[in-house]
Image (cartoon, rainbow, N blue to C red; front, side, top):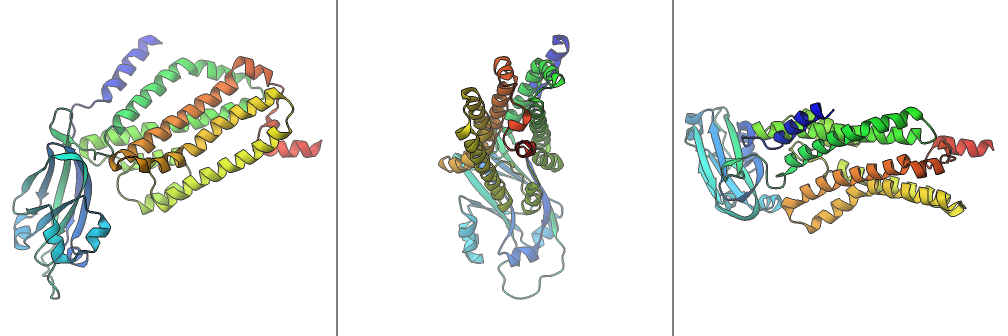
Length: 387
């Protein structure tokens, strides 16, 4: 097997470090009507860090942009709520950088950032702050905006915003670990599944959860790998990763959240409900296990249930706990702390449960436990009623 494993591992390792990449890409239309309604058309946000940050703007109709006196306003470290409280004229004075859109392509260097800083881009023109009066039907100005951080060599080619930097390499290394672990353990696991026994259902559930988690990691890697090249990625793969990792509420979140983000951050209402659901499930499990352990006389069975509860609680509670704890970190670190922490905690949870059910000594000692004695199973209540 090593003959075939080594080239694949090497290929996965090399894929972790792409040679070059293009920045985050935003395409659309500069609309005078929207700019007037919103006192400036919101374009995008990006978190720059370090030196050599770059914003590249490309126009599709330069004469029209010049006729409209089109400008791109860049703000840094200004909350959206604070910006909303400013009048149209005040917004112009608060802009850190004003880019006059008079060329087909404009390269704007971002000043050195001593710490990661959020920059917002707004579009205005000669009609934005003019009260009353119609806007001539000139049409809209098409644009393409590239936002770039410096890579490890100091060149502005890194598309990831500061809070996303490193996630691509993390998922690549995670897939590498899955692949190596699969090569080592897939055969004994398959043999354990073929033998059956009282723990068969538990092993099947664990294997399904691990397969879904691995599929989610693969989809995230594919999305981020594409994102590193064109700044757009494959949103379908990102959505598929969410569906594989969790439940139906994420479909709701897809309609309410359009920006590229890591789904583990989940700052929307649907994301909050998902974390609440995890806490509720953990409480239900704790209640059932408490009733079982308090009446169980066998010390072996009590130890079994306690080990089982540790793995389950780690799976259910890691996300809510990390989401709360992330407020202690800087803003550019929060997404990475939650994402990496949740993935690693869930992987550790699966390993703990696998060890519990595959340990030869413990497995054979508790083999007298039938599947109906496990918590949260329908047949358990039915069996007790029968006797």
